Length: 492
Image (cartoon, rainbow, N blue to C red):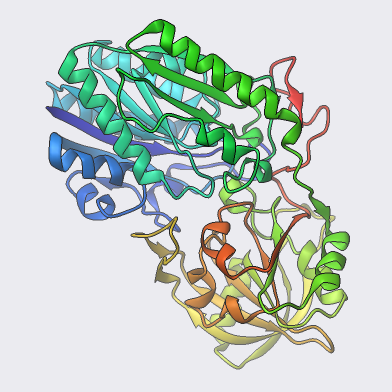
C-alpha cells in the first residue's frame, strides 16, 4: 500500500496581537521547523508526534511517501500567503507521488486563516479538488480541535488525541494508520456519526488527568477496528473564536446504526458532565496569597499562569504574576518562561555575573501597560538547544534561540526567571534545568502553561493553583467574548 504522509499544524488564537507568517512555519522553535521528503523519517520516527506514530505503523504495513510537515507556535490568524504556499507545496508533492492508495495528514483542527475560518476544511477541500474523492484520507487531530462538518465530510476517518497533557500524540497517529489500512484493505469506507455540543469548555477544565474529562475519555473504544467501531472526542479551542468551535464527537463504524448509537452515548455523557467542568481559577493576588498560606512545602507549589501561554497563542510576556510575587517578597521561587528578545540580548552581551536594570516583558500589552521594572543578575546563559525529557515531548530537540536565567536583585524577594528570545510554553522541566535552575528544589514555581506542564511537573508538585493573570488566551468566559461563535452555545 503506497501512502503519502504530510502534516500542517497551527492552533490559532484570534485574540493574539501577532499574526502567523510563512517564516513562523519554517523556523525551528520548541518544535521542528518545516521538514520535507525523507528527512521526515529522521526527525519524527522516534518523536511523540502523530506523524511519528504513523511512521512507526507504516514501517510494518505501508510504503510511505513522506511529503512535508510544518508547524508554527500558536498565535494569531495565519496569513493567506503562508496557508497558500504550504498547501501548494503539499498538494504538489501529493500529485507527484500519484498513484496513491491512501493519504495520511497530521493536522491540528484549530487553524484559522485571514480568509478561512476553517483552515483544515479549506485545506482538505483543495486536496479533494486536486486529487478527487476516491483516495482514502486519514486525519489525526489535536484534542483541542474545533471539528467542523466540512472537515468531517472531506476526510474518511479521523483520530483525535485522548490525553491532555498530550502524551498520546504518537499513539493517535498509529491509530490513524491502522484504520486507514483497514479501509484500503476492505475497499469500504466507514459511516461517520458527527455530533457538536452546545457549550464551550475552558482549557484548564479539559485536563484528562482530572474529572470529568478523565471518565469521559475512559468511555472511548480501545480497538483500532472499524468492524467494532472507533470513536473520539475533541474538546475544542475557544480562543479560535469561529462559528463551529467547541466540543465534538466523531464515531466511525461499518454499521451506520452502530456509529450513531456510539455517538449518541458519548454525546449524552458530555451533556451530563457539563456542570462538572468547574475548575477554580484565581485572580493574581488571591492566587499568590493562597500559595503563601499553603507553603512552603517539601515539594514546589505551582502557580499556572494560564492566560499567558504561548502554547495557546498568547505572548508569554505578561509580568503581572511576577510583579505580585516580588511585591509580597516570595522566596525560593522560579518563573518561566518570559519572552523578551531585548532583555536576552542584554544578558548575553554582559555575561554571567553582570547586573543591569531594565523593563522586562509586556511588549505586546499596549502602550498603557508597562513591563516589570527591576534590577537583575545574570546567573546563566544558553543557546536554547536542549533535549526534552518529559513524557509529552520525548524525542524532540528544542531550538529556542538564546536564553538567559536571571535573578531578581531585591530586598526581600528571591526569584529566578527564565527569559527566552522565542515564545515557548513551559511544558518540560528541561526548559529550566538546561540553564541551571532545578525546579524540584524550589518552593514555588510560576509557570506559563495551562495543563501541559502537568506531564513533567505533577510528579514534583505539592499543589497546583490556576492563575487568571493578564494574557491573550481567556480561561474565564463572559458574554460577548466570542463574536464569531454560532448562536445557542453556552459559556462555562
